[in-house]
Image 1 (tube, rainbow, N blue to C red):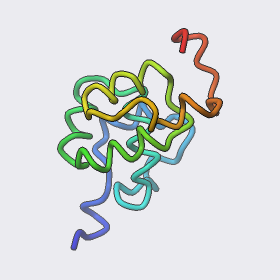
Image 2 (cartoon, one colour):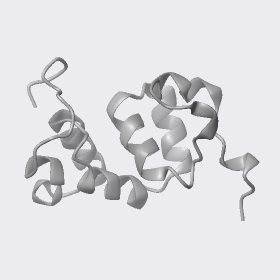
Image 3 (spheres, one colour):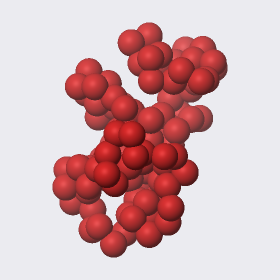
Length: 105
């Protein structure tokens, strides 16, 4: 079992959690939120970390259930993880975040 210390996030991810107290984020306890934020905003380094620390099944669950990711993000991860588009929630429910500034999704 991991200790609390090993569940802390590396400092280079702090930029993706601007509205949160980064020191209180835990990779197990906040799994959905972390995956959701990193698939939406993460760069190559963040995505490498994500894929090393979470299974494709864990990432796919977030892609399917999140309403906060953009359609573009959902499409990309659906292709990567072979998720049928009809099983992705953000295509059937309105997004929680306005993504118009970044995409047409």
